[in-house]
Length: 429
Ligand code: IMP
Figure (cartoon, rainbow, N blue to C red):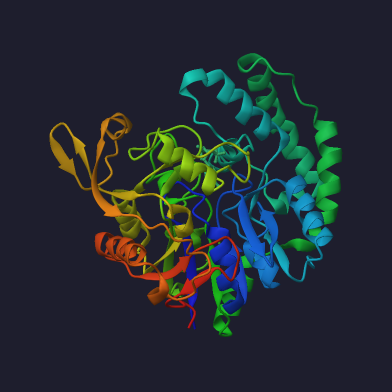
């Protein structure tokens, strides 16, 4: 039996949604374990595009989808997403979607504080998605968060909200010059959400572990990417959760022995949304070409993504931090038509070559990428379905990635559609 974790190796937006949707066919359960609706997972099936922010990408394959305790959930967004999926003819209900009773709830003050704090920071802003993710995790760690188990207990919700709002309103009014929030209004709104969501709220650790005992296969779906990890990313330009594979266990209530494989999703080039250093960023027409051809706009905020060359310093870091067992290379078709390709193999800093990502943000910002140059290919590869039919230059590019990361490529994606894929090794088989 296989239980596989999927994580992003770069700064998110690697195309995890497509690979999760593809591999979900072989899983019984798909679990989200961190992040929230800052994520946007795009799936294209039979020419139709679906975007989910909270519901695991396994929903299109009609698998049991679980939102783990490590996720922060905006109930309004979750309900809208359930309605959106239903309107697209996908069945979603408490039998195939569950939310952990211990998952934290994103409250309206989290969103207000997220946006207002960013505005206050001016030039030092992080470029958050403004969805309240950071402030919700802040409250979780400071032990004044509201979990789903409390959301569905009206008396407890009222009691907690009254003392939490005292503090939030002080911050909103005195520090952020915003209007105070009214507890009655929030209570009314959230009681209605609680009523609709109550049937979905479960002890998911028990459900997942029992399923594993019964021989079921689980796919753990990461959000964002390794270099947005709160501990291991380019701090402070990171998200507020651990995005690395180890958190699949903490964020869903299973032990590490349950995991049998870890696939790192690698976009064939690099992108980043929001602020923060990006050594291989392109500011020329090649960057524009990749941005346009790859339709590199954030699925959540619509922001233009910054684009750059593939960076194997990042990939090696991701391989180590996640114990990757295989790679899935995505958006390889986008590079078609670029005459020469560059792959970053190290960073030059103060006359030295660094092979690992430095922790100091100023050091990383001053690093100059060292490149290997490879020939590009002109062909459209999106119709190709086997490795041997890819152009020589494309195969050389893939070989180089394997050699520089020392991790085998299991899956190659040559287009957004589920079928536009070359599977070399299915981790579930
Ligand atoms: P937050 O997660 O909204 O707090 O944003 C923190 C940083 O993470 C910002 O730079 C965001 O652009 C980035 N970020 C958050 N979620 C994603 C994602 O799913 N893809 C890419 N970047 C993300």
